[in-house]
Image 1 (cartoon, rainbow, N blue to C red):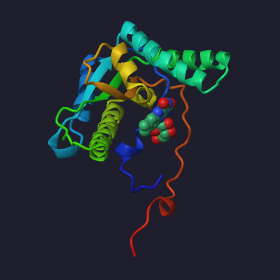
Image 2 (image 1 turned 30 degrees about the horizontal axis):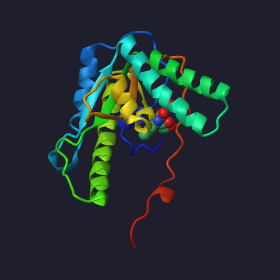
Image 3 (image 1 turned 180 degrees about the vertical axis):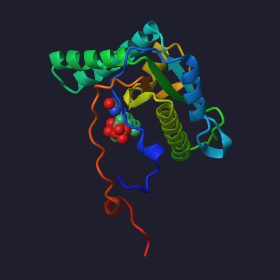
Image 4 (image 1 turned 90 degrees about the vertical axis):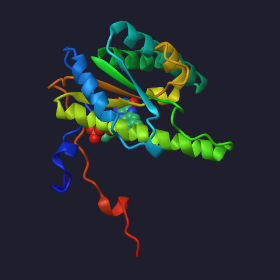
Length: 204
Ligand SMILES: Cc1cc2nc3c(=O)[nH]c(=O)nc-3n(C[C@H](O)[C@H](O)[C@H](O)COP(=O)(O)O)c2cc1C
């Protein structure tokens, strides 16, 4: 990688296999605190974080999201045996992570507009801010020697994830990060070089 990328950014990778060791709640709090200093639209804090580190809660979340994924895959026409396999693998993945940090969005602090295009833009800003918060969280995890990996699932089933965790009605899960101590046997894909000339342009 280019030596122009700061080492602390380079150090974060998505790591999908963890040791069985629990993560102390103080460490989980510290990474959530880092998330909460992310930039957010007009001084709002439209995110809520739910730390899921008990077996029962992990199981409830995986079951709730899994039921929705199963229904979606079957509606797509995917073969039942394949659906069983995919949903079970996803459930196992979440169960095996020592902690899951679920990033939720709320309308609290956001501007309300009478029309749909601006409502969508406002929600989009909140989502961008949640992305920044999640990156902060993962960078803070890496800084503490913790492994993390973002899991997309809740954005496809916010209501099901919310209900599985018995969250307030206006806390809508949109992101999930698995957190734990890295399994040293895990080998991720090498990070591809950044083709800067394809990904950015300067104005003429
Ligand atoms: C919004 C988002 C959703 C993601 N969802 C998943 C996921 O569901 N499962 C997974 O294993 N990785 C997921 N990832 C991680 C990406 O695969 C990973 O960031 C990418 O491959 C680059 O690797 P790196 O994070 O190690 O640099 C997600 C990342 C983002 C930003």
